[in-house]
Length: 582
Image (tube, rainbow, N blue to C red):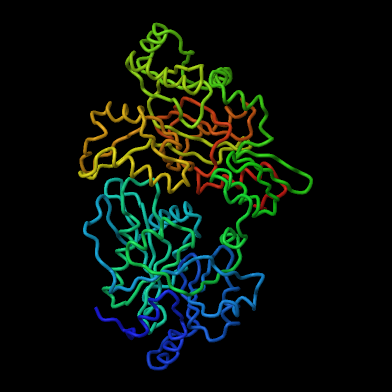
């Protein structure tokens, strides 16, 4: 297709140090003849995109950005002299630490294979916008208000979403803007924004497909290139964009200092190397003006100080949790006995003994769960054991993590995690064991390895699928081996436990939680006298009253329940005077 940009300007912009002087001059020169807009701004539902090259008055550009409404996130891009704009409001504006990348459409090469298992479409109705905002919240992005979006016929953006063909769930979204329609851009450019993909989806290539679709969409509308902004240290995203042919563009973007952008302008603190479970807490503390001191990054140990109050934490475990409450949670026998005395439902259990004693317990309950009495992160846990020989193997494996091993009656159903903070239910989610979806080409081993890499990337290394005996056993029980090719579209669980550290995933069900389950979780926390707890239940459905409490975690991962306000409620508990007025 033809490109309106002159060849000499193309070479300049495609180099390692392009400039926007010619773009500004071209825009000014053609403005009269083409009716190109000045002081151009487009509302995207989450905030405005302000095009810096269309503003001749830098003071006006700064003042326009300062007019950002509360709760929105405006962005000024293509700023030639950012230091001048910042000089008008140095305490309120900041230079965005993101790179701008460009793909010239003449360099684009289509994909060799079409995506499988999902399709792309425009959003239609409130349910789609809610699904898009769910993805945005998971990425800590500002939510979109569809009522504020500049209409497409007036130069507004176009949204696309990826929908799983089997479940009908929205698993990805992207937004694009045609610059010619937005402000009569003489360069015939376009840009990509708000790419978000559900990290729990079993479909591969969702993000790449959304980007390619946007490229081809704008190519068909005679655009010349596609620009995008990506955080400078987002290696995973940059690897995808390099693969597609994007190159760095030397330009700048500005934003206003607000709570949404805080992580971008406060700079790297001592909590930078903490794991996600600790970092979600320290960032909320910093947002409220609470002093953070990190003592051991590897262990997630830090202290929070505000006024005369100082509290030590290890992730969500704090000084407010007593040693007795912690012991009651760690020792699973004590947990069961404490809850049973309060009339709460728990599994039948006994300590593993001789092979004959273990076999008798198996005969009594038909299927059992084996776990270390004092263990965590799903290590040494085997589920739904129905064979005496497999039972002894599972007991031996569990003893590698604790000399005392517990046998429990097996209760089928969905694995529900309920988070209780200050004796109130803050979040609830169904935990799904790690699973893969066949493509008819890759072996189960390859699918597991690929899914494990995705989980590691989306959880900063906290979640992965072990390639161990439990994974092999889970696969073989279902009639497969790790070297078998899983048929296209066939979904297979590769772990029996839904622990997040072994590749499990969460589906938020907070709004649909049955009142009986909600009250049981609160009663269990009160029985253990623990202010922060993660209750693990087996339930037929989260909106039904039946349950069995299988474990209580004294140090639950708050980051696992986004977008629920887990860190906010945790800091409310520790420092109630910093609570925002309702």
